[in-house]
Each structure stands twice: as structure tokens, then as C-alpha cells.
Image (cartoon, rainbow, N blue to C red; front, side, top):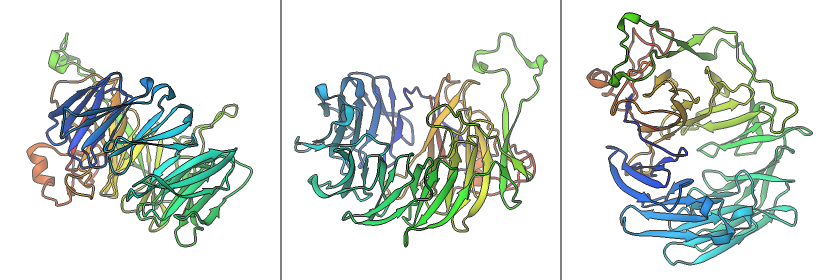
Length: 505
């Protein structure tokens, strides 16, 4: 795996453009736009204050910078660098800002969620949407960009409004049978809207585009309810993560539960592959140490190697006992995501924070468990193939695929922490390619410029890597490897990920 040099970054603000051509990052009040292939700076913009949020337009021609503290939004153009737009919400304040799907309107949410202001960059017109509700996910667009669904709160009751994005006219308005609406989300095909209640009541409702109630699902009563929801890319399945530590899968035909996945603390099934991360610090050779160390070799005196070992069942996972006297206990399924082909589902139970569970949706069974040494902060699927990137806040990034999993040591000193990761989409194509992966880190200091340290996983680079792996049309080749740290130093499948890895500070 190839790494770029380390770039400075503020507040983990770094995003690829939707077409995959550019990479935007923020350093305090400066916005830096780079070419995603060469990482050369294309544009450098200066905002009026520190940037708290950035977002690309859908056509990758504009990028907005939200300055929440000052109630401002500044918009920059890549084709016309001299053009810029400033939106001032004034005394109303600003808590959220996003693009409309057409890339020519900006939706700003004022403080206390009093209203949503729709600003047009073409006609300079302004529209207002009243009564937006402050909830987990209160604004959602259909994938084709035609409709907007908005969660509302009026007279102590929850409502949903569906608006047409072309003219922002109201299409449907209906009330929801919820006590406290927590979020809404369109299915990828844009035909069904899911709305779920807060954690105090287990209820998820499915509505059609015209506001008809299609189905209501309730798994149990008198206990904490829904914690996370995710649609499959095919719109055939709806995964509902609950506070009882189970994921329930609903089908798109009857909207009934077809199966439920639990997260037990002990794995007994021999058909389940359990990958367990193990670290080993190499011994220090005092005779080879130089005092003071040379400037080029500045860094930690020893590096910790990481590998995955295939554990034998039964395997007991590390569990976290929640605090009974605190709100929002660390229990239940806190994160879940489908692979782009809808064949796999990745989940994380907050009571077992160091494990990622991979489920086979076609066979409706648990396929693999990845147990890390640290708590899992985030994971994200490659937008094109079944490949999962995992970050734990340490100095490594982990990749899983059906062929196996690897641990990749990223450049930097011992205090490097990888906070999150995002994949790059393809250039000039509507289909994502997943060719690049961006990780964002904190509390790190850059190493030598352009350095490419050795990785502890079975990952090739240089001429040898090109000879072994680059010939595969999919970017993945398999070889027997004798010196591999990824799977217990035994024979394993050599996995070469032909990707550009941009590692940011």
C-alpha cells in the first residue's frame, strides 16, 4: 500500500469530491483543494474565520465552508476561482448547512431549529421552511435528487413534509405515529421512507412517497428501542440495530422480520472465522542505537508490529459493563453498514467495542469477527467492492475482504492516531471505484517528507509489488507469502490492494 506525505488538517475536515478528481482539506481558516491523483495544490481559499464544516456540491464544481460561530457560509468555485459567495444568517445563527442535490441551492438551519433557509445561487432567491425538528436525522433527499423529506414538530406532535426540490413546493404533509421522532431516511430507490421513534419506544414506520403508511414494526416493548438504522444499497433489506444488542433484518416485500443477529460475548461456532489482533514489539539492539539519533530517523525507538491471528473457538470477547447510573448507556448496536453489493453487513455492538462483526446476508449467518486491541471508532465500506476499512484511533488502519484481513502501519510517530477514513470515488464515472482511501488523524507529527515506511501487513510496494499484484484487473492478486505478519506468520493469501493511500494530519 502506497502512502502520500503527511498534510496538516484541522477538525478532521477532509473530503474527496463526488467525481473523485479533487481532495479538499481545511487548516483553520484556509481551504486547500488538491488534485486527487498528484496531490498537487489546485486552489487555496481563505475564509473569514475558522472553518467548522465543508461539503462538495454534487457536480464537484462548488464547495461550501460553514463558519457556525459567525453564522456564515462561504461558497467557492473551482472553475472560476475569482467568484465566491457569502451567506450571512445574521442574528438567527447557524447550526447546519448542506447542499441540495442539484448543487445550486444551499439549505441552512438556524439556531434552535427555528427554520431552514434555502438559498439559490442562480436566482439569488430565498425560501423558508418552518418547524424543522432537531433530531438525529431530520433532513433526507432521495438519491435521484427529486424529493426532500423533512421531520417537523408542531403543537407537540411529529410530522413529515415531502417537498419537490425543483421549486421547493410542498408535495405531501402527514403526521407520524411516534412519541418523539428520532430520524427519517429514504430507501436508495426513493420509493419508501423509514421513520423511527426515539430510544424510549421501539417503533419504525414505513411510508410510501404519497404518505401512505405501509407497515409498522415493533420488536418489543417497555425497554430501550432503536439505536441505528441502515438500508441496503439494493433497497431489499432494512437493518435495525437495537439497544438489546440485536440487529433485525426486514424485507421489502412484506416488511416483516426475516432474521435477527445477536452479538454474544463468546463465539462457539467453528464455521465462524475470528481474527484476533496481536502486537509484538521487536527487541531493542543497543549497539545499533545512535545518541543523539540522526534527524532523518527521528521518531520512536521501537515500533510495534501488528498482525491478525486466526483464533480457535471458543473465543471470549472483551465486554464493557455499562454504567447503570448514567444516561445513554454503552449498550446496543451503535453502528451498522451494508457492503455496496448488499452481500455483507458490518456491525459494532457498543457493549463489545473492540469487535467488528461481518454478516453474510445471502446465507443469513455470521461470517467473521474482527477483534481489535482498541475500541473501534469507525468503519466504512469500499464503494465498489466488498472491502471494509476500520479505524481504532491507533497508528494502524485495518482492511477486511472475503479473502482475509490485513493490518497496515501508517507513517508517523508513536503518538499517531487514525481517527476516521473515507474512500475515494472514481473519476468521470457514476460508479465508485474505491481506488483511494483517506484517513484522518490527530495528535501526530509528520515524519520525513515523502517517507514510505514498511507496513506490518502483507502488502507489496515498489517493483516487486507491481510484478506480483498490479496485473490483476481488479487490483487484487493472491500469492503464497512466507514472511507475513497478517495471519499468524503462516501460509496466507497475498492480497495486494492497488490503491492510492492519502494519509493526513
